[in-house]
Image (cartoon, rainbow, N blue to C red; front, side, top):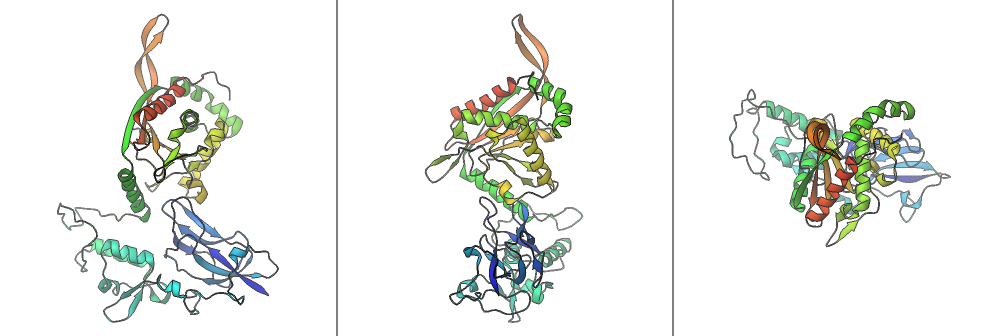
Length: 438
């Protein structure tokens, strides 16, 4: 005897409600082990895998590659031996104990649809009268690029039952861009046309379609600016003691702990300490309420090789010592750039730090990572002449200086709170103990 077990699209992080199914890693009929990956999925924040909830045999798929299921959707069913203990909420049964019917079985069998599922199917009436079945992702691309049903029938589909896949439509768009006169392309109706008229000569321009990730990043940046009135404050801090201490101890630190000591964990340590003294910046905005978070979860904005951005989160940063922060920072940065982050590692942030100094920028005005209320930008550390106060009088010396900039949501963070918090970070950095032990 066996029982049917649901494989659902798991929760993928705060604010993520759907994911693109990039690839099935198993076929119908394959044996799969507990916690073995069955599918690769991609979101706007991270690529990850869906794991099997038990050991068994893959029985049905309910989405094709390129489609976009929502969190909680049933994406596959597997059969599991009757003696295996399975949580009740994962069992797929109806009142008689048989598996419920669902969407088309990708392996080939046709299954009746539930009434509630019919609305999720997308069809485009073709001129010939036949129905062209497309995924939600392809439908979204058609809408954004202004591709009509008339054009759709000219695209050769390579998917199941000759369906047009994401790769098919993107290849078509590439051809349309490089050969603008070869097809008839109606302009998208949902976007305003640019006021400047450009030549269609491909020798004069390079047109790069936005990736899905870049499109979502753009939308969220606009949404953040429209949601929160941004104010940015600046402070300059003398970090000479910190720089000299780190340069003196980095080799010994790596030898002793096996970790490279960068400036990032030192800054994170200072930020976590300042948040303890000004907890109201470690907050988010609800409906007519401010939610002050007790955990200090610092997002670490990280540039990817693709040029996109991801924000892994240092959880409970206030509880970590320098070694713990260093290990976490190095691990998250390495796996972020290798696209190996887990969904849980990019959610739950309460405050964000971005290092514009890594690009040799002296300062910046960062955009708040919603629903947080503040974000700190670290500028490049520069040697500058500065006034040094001594008991014998003032003198001029060469010091390591940094400009810190804090953007905050003026709905809930006033200039006094934002300014005092930023000044406190600067004070902590300037008072760095140069005699600190490892």
